Length: 453
Image (tube, rainbow, N blue to C red):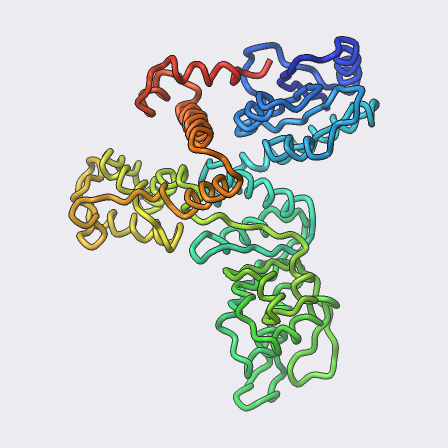
């Protein structure tokens, strides 16, 4: 299947190299999209050097476009520059000098990227995972990659309330096995040592006092499906040892039985602990960690994805009011939700929106009076959560590197302008109004950020 892709060239590029590369790409079924056509979701960048302009543009364009970079140069591209391109948002980087016949490989990359894009836009993903922030979209791409294209074990790490179980459900739904079984959830924090064997492996009738009937454990119930071990970091070391053998060999014995039974499942684990640190301090087995961490996904806390707060709030309101469209949020309520901190992450936001919803009456907008008294800002003062530890850490790091106030101000201003342009869909006037500056100030920054061509 051919691909029509958006094309961006960063000069200078030797015409012979560029024309030869484009010809081979066309033979492989890759057609560049004419300038100013609608975005098709796939992009190709040609460059010979890694400039700040190219990195800046990649960071902007990769929000909505999966981009492959081809370095057309007769010199070897430094490895650190390749990783800079990847960090800026490239899906892959090919150095033409080292692999001049890579057109078919690039076409295969686009095949895969299109599959991932289609899954990301599917109802299965859209209904489970609300948000459009860069870090959230990056996580969803990881979830799609591992859920739909591998059978690897997955370790989901993140603070309480970030939606780890929701992502485990999504991994299960993306599983492509035609005879996929059920998702079985086991909360490791609730397992007592005395009943752990029964919870994990089941028991025979009469195996212990109170075992009136035989019982299937989580490993048997998950056969053919997905076993989700929530809060696995809470398991004490003796229970970790019990778990390890069954995870390694996919075999277990019921309590009170002498017969081994086989089970086949995808393993997904979640924890709010830093398991690598737990391994280092001896609180979590290294061998078990490497068994469960075939693929590690880190879920960002809500403070790292503030762009998603309002869309999440609207999503929760839609669920609470399923009979009709949810009421809009008054501007003051929007600002309140954006300014508030959420130590409990998405779970806390959902609970807050639920309280607001139950106070709301009528069909009009949700207004400040709908916010419960206990949730309102003290003395009318709202917080400034953007001035948090992340900002202080970045500034401290800059000072340690010897970066002066002038450079800090320049980078901060450029970053704010870039983010304002992103938020306002590249509209200079609205971005300038948002920042409280002139259109000209924003226009100077926007010059290097044009549509793909």
